[in-house]
Length: 430
Image 1 (cartoon, rainbow, N blue to C red):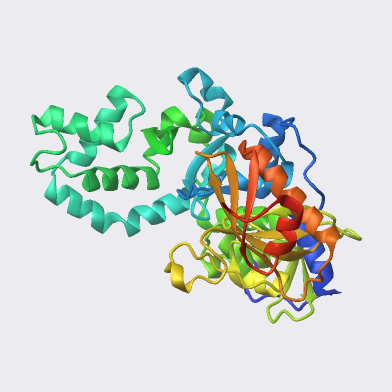
Image 2: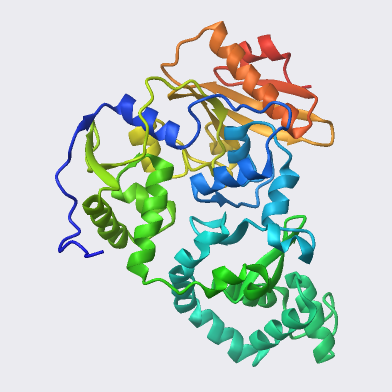
């Protein structure tokens, strides 16, 4: 494709209301209708199809409710067996490798992506290699040959955690085990493993609990992916922007850049090329200062009637400037905010009903007692009160509790929606 002479966005085309833009975006994300599954009928094929549509699932270590990569599937498909996701991302045995459809890498942040996306992200691995080279030099200076020895260990022994690699290093060097004085520190082992993972030498073969087991990429990725030539960064950016535009439906160039954490200048060039190719259509959205772009396949439903809790790491809400512009929703995750300064709670999930965020709930899975705790429940300002909306919100919470295997929902007294929800779901926390 011949690149346009300028990456300056072309003049805006047709005009859309903000309500129309919301419906396009919600439909593109697969949140325009209630999840179909209530009994775990989701198949591995349906799950992989969804991830290919979204482009990725962000991974995060927080496990107050459910792991970050698990929630977007539930929000869109309903109750499903999370073992399906484990099988297509982290096969338990080498014989399961042929069923691997998803793989870990750095994409938005740490993410699961379809295996076929990996060649599009090699530029990011090369970028990380350059960015982290100073750290690698320091490791090599402090521990000569250790990075190469770590690669040899994994090559010889197969998938291993950083802790297991550390133990093997100590064994080979006749060093004391961890817990005794020794030259080799856990942090240095982990840094080396993460350097090798981020730069594409290692991949994550499996997880044990939430612990990564590293292996050589050539033994994790399918041979055809390994053999795919590395794309020029501009071509990779264009393909990734096209993926992001499919997932977002309608977005600004800045929105599209954030999806796979692309350089904004590269994303703008890709947008201009995709407009020239007819894949993106410039549009003007009421109230948006930046030009917007609608993917040619994006639907504009007459109405959307979904109902879903979305995690803080869900693509619908992960880019906070877009939340305010598209959803009229100010959202901040407050995990790292001191408790006394939190406004809505520790781990707060927005509730989307139709084309509007109508509330947000602080949620916690108390697995020891089998309860879904709701320490705070808030109705968004301006959302009309009424029993129908409360009943629907309660139904979403019940579905979540059922999926998590929690038999009771306990709503505390905090928040503008707490009293009404307790009237439907039960009394305050005991």
